[in-house]
Every structure is written in structure tokens, then in C-alpha cells.
Image 1 (cartoon, rainbow, N blue to C red):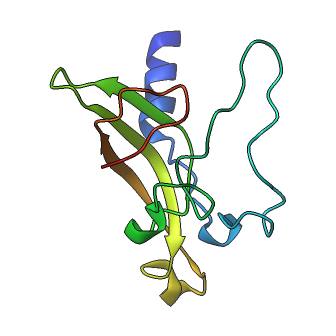
Image 2 (cartoon, rainbow, N blue to C red):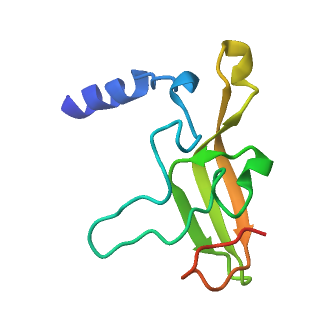
Length: 121
């Protein structure tokens, strides 16, 4: 009985829509400046996306991202998949937002020294 109720709840739950007006990927305007200050044994090395990054991801209209997952594709390349990304303009401009929100961006790198950051090809 409990399993049926859980399955029904999962099947009928509608995910909340993302609010494109709540996105602001511009450093300084969104309250962030430079690399994040991390605690513990982890430290930030370089910014790889956005206006302050060396990769010029803004040329692909990728100003901000959420998580990035990297893997070696077995051909000497590192692929990085980003979930949600934000840039300027369409499609949300017609809904009154300056920001374009989308999912799934993939970047490729042949950089083999990640100790100083990663350069996308």
C-alpha cells in the first residue's frame, strides 16, 4: 500500500518551473567576485566559464552554469557537461527576462595539466 502511494505521488508530481528572472550570471551584479573561498583541503584553481574566465564561454552564450561533470573520453580529451546554463537573450527575452536559461552544454578540452585550470578547445 505504501509503495503504491509513493509511486502515485512521484508519478503525479509536477516539477516547479525555473524562474528565468531569478538568474544573474554577471559577476559583481550577482554578488560574486572572483574565485570562491573554499574551506578544508579544497581550493579553487581557475574560473573556466563566464565573463571572467579565460575560455570565452560567453562566445557560446554561456555566462554562468551550475554543476559541471568532467570525464576522460579515452581519446586524450576531457569532456565537461554542464547542467543548467545562463546567457543573454532568447528564448526568455520574449517573456520579459534578459537571461536565456537552457540545459546541457558540453565542452571539450585537450588540456592535460589541470593544476592551473582547464582550457576548452
